[in-house]
Image 1 (cartoon, rainbow, N blue to C red):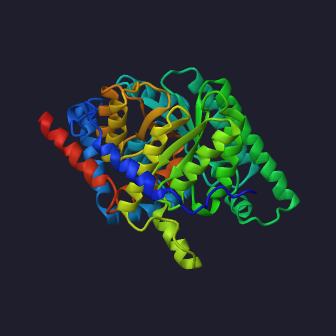
Image 2 (spheres, one colour):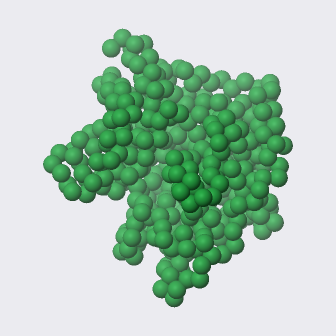
Length: 417
């Protein structure tokens, strides 16, 4: 399998300079990310107080660490009251519901504030053909559901819910596959193609999430095949790039050049990344250079350079700026204002996780930008790994829990409750 993912960045400095140039633009978007009245207008007093209590608990790193260690085993063992506690705390905060029908209330509530929904059936790390097919069918159901709603433009999926990690890793290593593994790979392609085909006929886009670096090249390869097939006239398929990786800015540039050469449009969802500690630990254990930027500053520079590159080519790249960083969102809004681009352009999109960064999401929506919440749903046992990852990454020193806690406290004070 051709490796599309590991060139050495050749134009990194140039694109960093382009990103820095955005700050000199004269256009000024009418945005205030500190406006908590707009940010939390969708929450009742009781809901706001509940969020405050939860963010206060999640701001205690030791408590999150303990919950991460015991959460999955407790759910699997079906210990008394555990599922109920999870559902009424972090599940309620970060997930739309256990089923599509339950999620409809969340979708409607967001739409009232001009916020769209990206649906994600929270399945990952599956191990059998039966489980893979369940995930595929649920994803297709979500796409068909989205096709009937102008509030749900996108469905998201994880490749590890559709095939084994082991096969993706072996594909990336270049090892020869057994006949059974070749059959499994063909089955994966059929599942992915079924998902993308249904997205295309239901006028819905499909995001494929980024995962660990040792399987990401395999994911990139499959997603690129689907973009070539379905992105001829409009962007149906998006790949996700984790910009904390040192090679992703160059990969973005190369992906665009390949799309230009092969005659299709590029779909690019940019995130900073969710597996930093795992990536660094594995690199140290196995004796190869860490694929992660050495510090937050370098990651931020790469991320904003990637945003600038996509914006500079917005007619041929559909961008989703999936960031909780206020500066990165402001820079994109500023670019749109400076260039007098239509805020509703289908290639200019913002997104944040449901239950997080409401100050960014709802203020962007109030100002008329294309913005959506990424809303996971599914049985609690399925989405617990996702929930634990959210808690861990956002309670870290560089995470967002302290910010969320302070903003909610500010709004409670403003309301006088």
